[in-house]
Image (cartoon, rainbow, N blue to C red; front, side, top):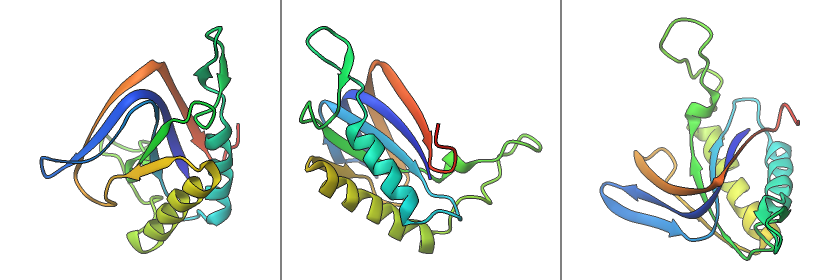
Length: 150
């Protein structure tokens, strides 16, 4: 699984021109599921994200997690995170999981994140054409890959 973590002061997702979900202070997560991913990949990412200290403390140092800040989380599915750009100019998506595998793992990730963090976790709609807006705070953007745990 690949995850883009963005610290935000606000984020929202629109579908068919209608506001579907919005959050205030917290994290916008773009989640891509790969064909080799399992629940263990989601478990690792959830634990890391819930406890990641990327919010400023009283001295402005990144020492607080989204849980410490009682923030919110917006999770958006994004198969393009597994794009291959090795050949040609048109990205290939053969490593992205098919919906029958990706949807259950995406839903597992969201539920596990709700349970682990006890925070408000909102989502887009898997596979929908979504318009995502955010106000990146910092900016702080972190890339994570459950197959390359750096």
